[in-house]
Length: 125
Image (cartoon, rainbow, N blue to C red; front, top):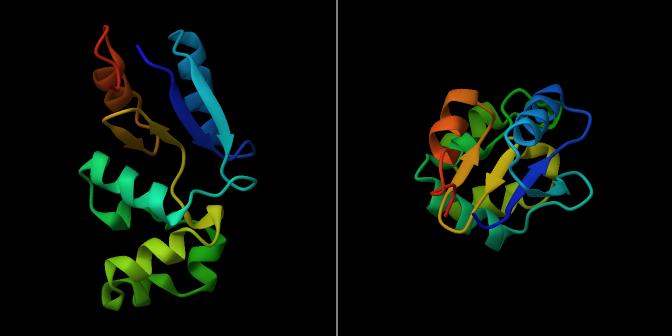
């Protein structure tokens, strides 16, 4: 399996659980701190397309920044381009962890989903 990128915030308990799960399952991943190395607009666009998920799933809706900016009310009227640009401004707006492979992206940590997508040789590619 090709190495994947594990985009996380080291102080996040969910990210810590996901990182432990990766280690326990011997899945090699390049760790990237989302606060220190925020995803670019281009990366977010690419990851969104690979994920097959609604763009809203890429927002950290429980985060302080999301609430400070009042995004619950603003997102429905924003274009996708505006949302991509906004996500690229601050890593704390982005849902984490993200597991990025060549052809698939997993958003948030749900053990069952990760197990299904990472079992066997198929992995994320």
